[in-house]
Structures are given as structure tokens and as C-alpha cells.
Length: 170
Image 1: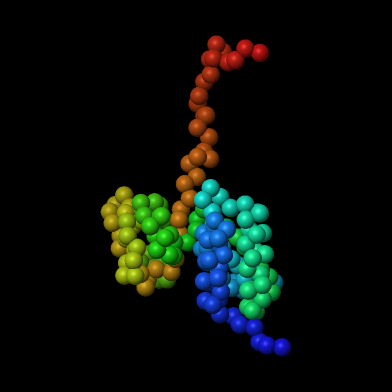
Image 2: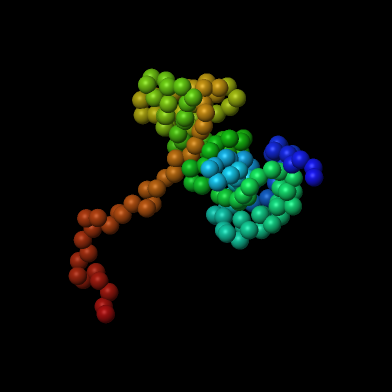
């Protein structure tokens, strides 16, 4: 029996093409080790949201190619609202939005900073905070992640009084 590979780079072009054919955005493929075993995780997204049917279709399409990879479990997932900012496409979409910047080593006593993404390239990550602009060397940054805007979930009805003549007739 031939030894299975663990290099995911050979799988990426196929995943990108397959996702594009299905109207999906291929975000990443990772091998993540957990106590239960090695998880081969494909991250895909779709404008308007990803459905279980989308995940299932992508799973069936990539599974034959994934058999060349050594893994215990395979999952197709959404990258989530707080998805990492990695690719050029991610950066373009994230410009002007709130992100968290995670550092390998603390700067000014912290490894985590939050602000509006102004720029991100091979050299630096630049965010805007209320106190001004912060620039981090790209090699010092372990992760840049979107910060979801959950304000739509807040209850705006507190303190609103409805007069009885505003209620509909029963």
C-alpha cells in the first residue's frame, strides 16, 4: 500500500477550482490535530451564507482527491464571522472594518490589539484606534481576524413606550 501524503498544497488548486464551479469561495484547507485524531478541514464560504447542502456538495466533490491525504476525519466548514484575514481577497474585503491583531510576543504589555484595518501587506499590518494609528511588522503578527459586528443582535426596544392608541385593533 502506498504511503499517503500530508502535503495539502497539491490539493489547494483542485479545491479552488471545485469551489468556484459550485459558486463557493474556497478559503483554506488545514490539517488540525485534536485528541481524537487528525482533522482535514476545508473552509468554504458563500455570499449570503453557507448552507449544509453547500458543505455536503463540496465534501462529496473533494473526497476522492482527499483520499491521497493521511487524515482521520474530514470536515467542510464555514470560516465563521470572525474569519482569519489571510489572502489578498480577505484583505480587500476587510479594509475599513474592525479586526483583532494577534502578536507572537507582547508589545506595550499586550499580544492582542483591536482596530480598523487600514493596511495589510507583506511588510506591515496597520490599524486605526481611537488613540491613533498602530503599525505592526508583519513577521510579528501571528493572526489577523475579523471582529464580528453583533450590534444587530442588541435589543433596541428597551425604554420604548407604546401608547395604547398605537396598538392595532383586535
